[in-house]
Amino acid sequence: MAAPLPSSSILLVALSLVVALCITAPGQLVAAADEDPLQDFCVADANAAITINGVTCKPADKVTAQDFTSTLLRTPAAAATYDSYHTSGSNGSKAAIVTLASVANFAGLNTQGLSIARIDFPPKGLNPPHVHPRATEVLFLVQGTLTVGFVSTAPNNTLFQTTLYPGDLFVFPRGLAHFQINPDKKNPALAIAALNSQNPGVSQLAVALFAANPPLPGNVLQNTFGIDEAEVDALTASVQKTIT
Ligand code: MN
Image (cartoon, rainbow, N blue to C red; front, side):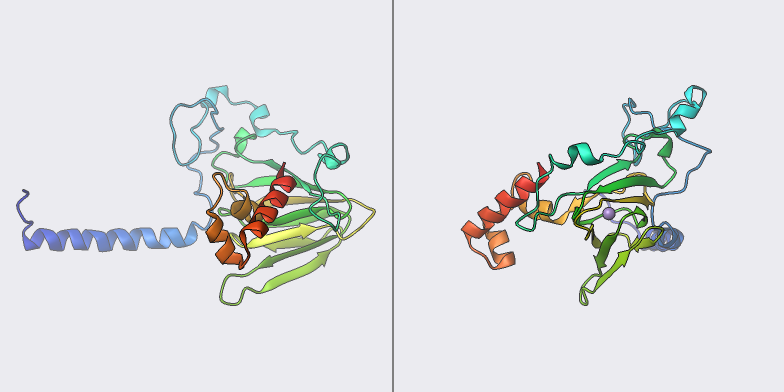
């Protein structure tokens, strides 16, 4: 058994903790998104065996302009694949297609604290309610019309919703549930979204509840929504259909 610490040591430990808190707390307040880079660049080395908070750097002498170039958003994900997306219900709304350039597929973004997406909306296309745990999103509408909104946290749970036209911007604050839908029955819409994390993450609310792997316990969903087992099964089947 270890000998008890003398009281002076306890005081020293306590003081050290206070000092450590004073040093780190302001840092946490300003580090609202990804950490700042400590060098010009740190191109992600996809083959690195080491796991860190981020991705390890490719050796600087192997880095080229190609590492800072991505053609991922060049091609509309659009028309050809729209029909393969399920309608999300009797209203015939289709899914929007989000193409995200993040550190996972664009190595030059590593440590730079941002990512970018193009979102192609077919007529009536929906980007369903979701959250990004690590990023604020700012959306620029290039073409078409979009109805967008987010919901603040409890207790108010206020919906902030508006309609955007080409050239308009909208901010979705970090971590808040949000959606975008094209209200136009005939014309597509195109948006570009920038996010202040190299790896913003996404949690689709319907998927998290009804298509988790393994599934949430039935009684959790029944009690949450006040519905019976058959209704849980119906919702589960419906959500599964929209994500395949
Ligand atoms: Mn989003």
